[in-house]
Image (cartoon, rainbow, N blue to C red; front, side, top):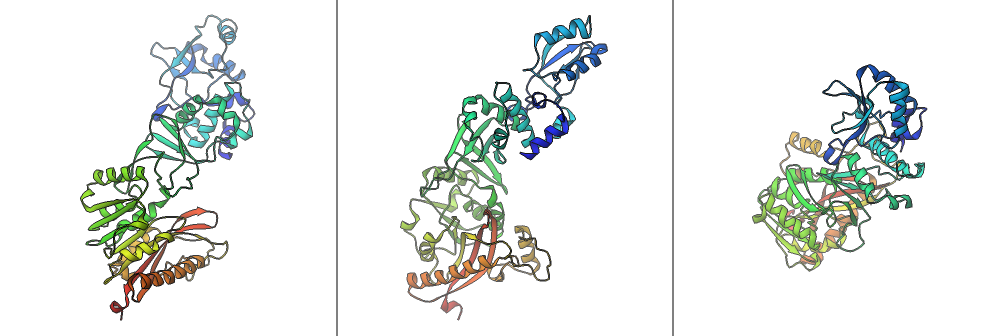
Length: 462
């Protein structure tokens, strides 16, 4: 990792690798842990410092501390300090000095240590800890450290592409305590690939801690869930904010893939939907969803339908349907058409992963920049208000930043939905693309987008 290497070069250029390791600056919850120090009288401080630096014993991650009795404590590297070093300090370097080893229970990080990023601090602390156990630190191990993680309170969820080298296995479980300490966490979990089962159960392993339940507040909404059993995507925040701004007062909504309430709750809490039918077949997600509805005070306006939504016993009820499933929600399109109100129709919010190709982004009119621009939900909301928009029907224009691949997919989806509506209701419907909204980049050249599609019986639109 370049950040770790830069941190080492910046502070320890030309020094041995052993000296470059940082001590455990943060314990669980970000609290400092004890470090070893050598105590002596103030007049011997400079001699001690020169000796410790020469023998690569000085802990540069913590400040020298003056104690209450007037003596001075110089932090040292625990694994490197030997009894012979104490004898040399006491008898040769500074004859007559006290030279007593001690522990600083509240060490103060040095200014340079405080400037490290979490990833740099993780690399420094783990490398030192590994070498202290007789394992040679290598470029392979450094590259195998996590590059990203999610924080849920005192639990950190690591990405799936880290700690894969065989050497780590011999260092467990103490390794996880070191990682958690470096990143200021008490519990640690590692994400695997989403299971191919239909409930999309996350393959998450709990590495440190006795349970995976966490709390997360998103746009004023409280979510509680078990990270080992339920998915939570921080990348969907833009769509949650947009959903929260939609004019849903008095409307009945069907959420075909409710999960723990990712979109069900914004529709109820902020968009003021009158009622939501929430469909979910992961039993763990249903437990979390039920709790989250209670926690946010909206349980009386939601009915949970547990099981396969293709067998949903609902029809002719919805003003709006949310299809929040990727890579594709197409399997739920017939159900969405069936639950729409047959005399009034409504709006579908269709999620999809769409492949796109470099160099084919449509640019806003008059723009000479090649950089892609995605308007934020706040910009979209602001533009609507400035234009006097008060409902979805006044947003019947595509975002100026839409890609041609998004438009082609949206047009194909519109055609398919119109056919399904005719088949389900036995009469012709008019469909119209209101908006295409990017949510996040799912993978290289794959975009998670949402299509807002208005669907009305032909007699309503002439």
